[in-house]
Length: 401
Image 1 (cartoon, rainbow, N blue to C red):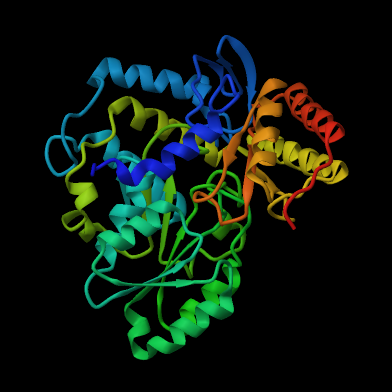
Image 2: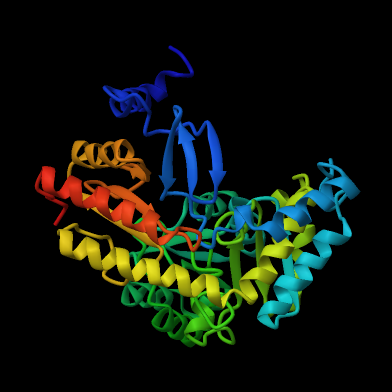
């Protein structure tokens, strides 16, 4: 017997995904990154269409300059948590700026987006409380439920009626229930029915936290996300987001219209026992936040790319994970080998995308995930579409029903 025996199935899957391919579809190695939309893989230049770099800010001149200046002034890291030596002025300023963007009194910065969910949820809900989560929630949300001592209830994905049934069974205990949803789900690119979910949650006296990881920067008048777009900010209790998508860095945040959020700093283990983000990351993110709030031009360009790609995918007969166009386009296939061939074909054509298969996706759902960026040029979008068209001509597209 061995500790590694339980990984045999994963080893077989890893081997299957790499068989016959020069480049593995698992943890694809990038030798060089040239820009927000271009990299080299095994010495060959490719268009990046699978990076979540929605606004292209990783190479923004102002953000890079801010990061370099912060490193020169304060060094490469803090070597301590926010509860010890890692509580710099930049961290506090970024928290105030994030909360202020929403017009709310409180915001907390975490070292990763994963930790934002892990740290906020595991502290907010404890023994005697209930977490009511969408079944298709991100792994960080499921892991937060495990770390929390709260009871966890999962409702069917994007099903407000199923959510209501669960809340109705809680009765008066619904006042100690925290409903957790994402506004934009990253696997299929589908949106949550937030208006209905918000109405039901408030009607039963429960609390609501919305993860805007993949929508922050892209939706709403100021880019604050789908809650802003739908006019729900006065009804949502907490919003979680990440720095690793539209903001082009690494880290995460939780903001709230309840000033009591500040108290979880003393209770959130992922916050207390993790070194704070380094000065360069914080400075670049602070600059990126300003770019988001003023970034109508970036959003306009991104949405023009989105409209063009979705129109072409429909023309070419691809099955997409959602009928509502968004920055994520998930090509759905019933067979793993078909999805793998599509991914490899795109890479061979110079387009990097993401291959996603069970257990990362629902059973029977295999995905080639395309994500667009405002930094993509029209020529790069044409290249992506051209590669998709050539693959559609070579073999029938028999996507999952």
